Length: 180
Image 1 (cartoon, one colour):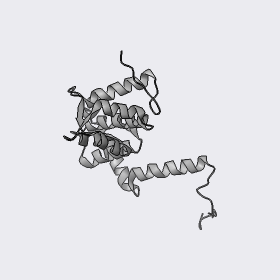
Image 2 (image 1 turned 135 degrees about the horizontal axis):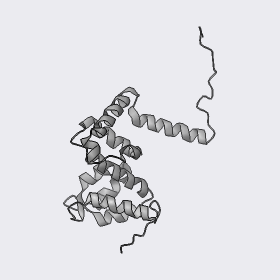
Image 3 (image 1 turned 90 degrees about the vertical axis):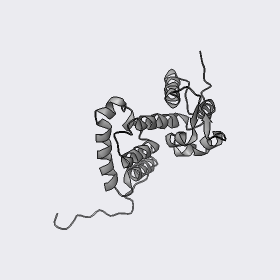
Image 4 (image 1 turned 45 degrees about the vertical axis):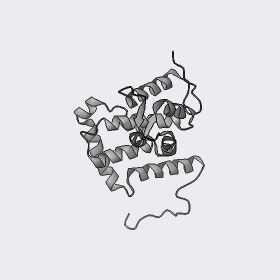
């Protein structure tokens, strides 16, 4: 029986341990115990770039045991694990979505929108669900100034301000439009 010294961001729950095991199985399908650092960088949240780079060897490989240990110790590890799992699901749909859709999906996962990809599997890709979702999201992304990640950032900012008692309309005076 393997035990993990979960701390900080990863709880010691069986669910967290099972999620960690599932993600690492997907990261190491050939059971080599390592992964190419460039691939891992594509899968990790951006704030883990320094960690991944510090773990790579002279051949550009990262030992997965060392990476697992760094996740366990990291304050962002639960969120990072969710992002990695979402990006692995996204990578599984590469044959059906376009490069701009792939980039948007990765960006949305980095923005914490991992729930969008929880149901993605081979069937979702084959049935066209992933492609349909990404086509819709790409249209939305193009219509909002700065894209969906800007929308998400603004929403988080407004929610935080509201929670702190702020009012985004402070300083404005309501007026009835002419002709109304």
